[in-house]
Image (cartoon, rainbow, N blue to C red; front, side, top):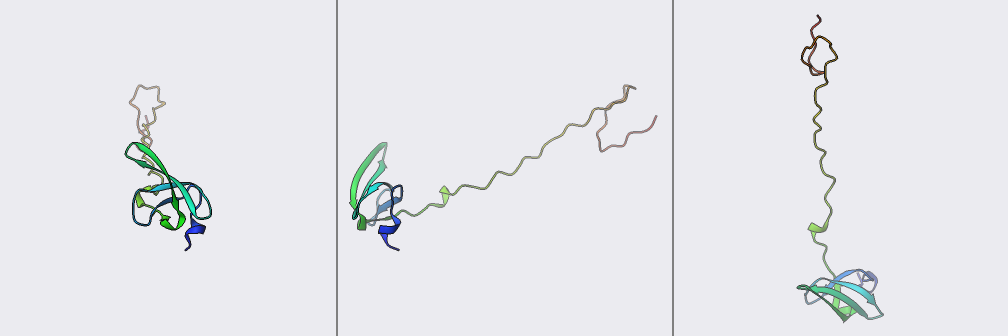
Length: 97
């Protein structure tokens, strides 16, 4: 896998000798211009293309699947009886008068 074909604008890279993850802002034939965060400060610099490689993709950046749906709680249906009896749920049979 050649670095020239894999590294484009927006690619996450790091120096072959180690260091922070950087984002490629632009590149020329043999240079990449990158930005990275150091503490609270943003840094920028130019590096030879053969001195950087793609940064590994950490597993924690993968998006999880959709959340499990919560069970819906349906209140029992109100009785339509006019006799003042207490409402019953749909699963309980109602005695005939």
